[in-house]
Image 1 (cartoon, one colour):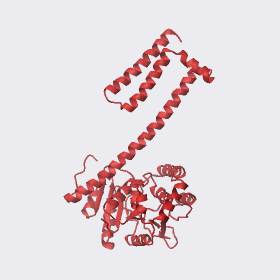
Image 2 (image 1 turned 180 degrees about the vertical axis):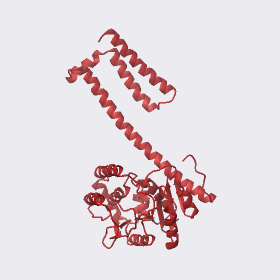
Image 3 (image 1 turned 30 degrees about the horizontal axis):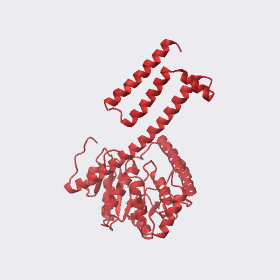
Image 4 (image 1 turned 30 degrees about the vertical axis):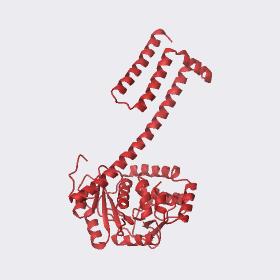
Length: 257
Length: 123
């Protein structure tokens, strides 16, 4: 059972303010996409409103964090036979029409396509504070050291995934905070092809940034530790790359470790 | 060690063992932990009855102050135990997480078939 329609996965935690507009925009501008909202233990009407708008809704019994919500979405995509899926924000900062740019990346053979706020040709409008920019620089540098490739936007939550990538992430997507950076390193180390395309992003239409500052610093340090001590060894990467080169089509099987 | 202190330590060790037995009998302690705690209780009891054993071991390792030997053993044991519990906790969290994800997917399927949202439970 395969499904050629792209699946848009929207992790949502108490997003009743912004979600309806996001879903409406998706339905109007990209009617060819299926949509799954993963309500991540929301205590407001997030799941109810999503259900009313006629999209798929997976309701987590308690808050797992964005990584857990995404993993649920990936498992859904795999079980329903979707060939491609896109991670999309519930707060309205992603443009439905830009999804096609990510999907084009998949068609070029990439397993994961990242919509970058900072890639050349991308957003000049996206403003971040100095501290945040520095923190992102450190991450960018660390990722470069770990995977030997320079990504301009390591923490972007606007991404598309191929079927093999979905199968891999359905059971091994990182569940710690700032999952996107770890996921990027994981995918590269596992031998998947990761590509960046420029993507414009807008300001948030509702809801508050998910975390307070001090907590953010703590999570940031935690992520650095995780990145430094974890992630698969070089030998494992080599093995996977070899496997991939030998038999590109059966890549989906090797993800089932 | 004075006789009264000796008796006190023996009574304490016996009480610990009795409490462990009670927990296991009332099935509030899983078997894998009961073995662990029984060996600890037994070790305590042996040391309580033969305190000279500690002196002997201390001499063997060249530790001049026997209670330090006891502290060292106790501390290392607790450290290993805490680490073990962290590991166990991580595993439990992973399982809870997997269950939650599975629940969400199954619920989605049920709701899709019924064509309506299930009422929210306790959350």
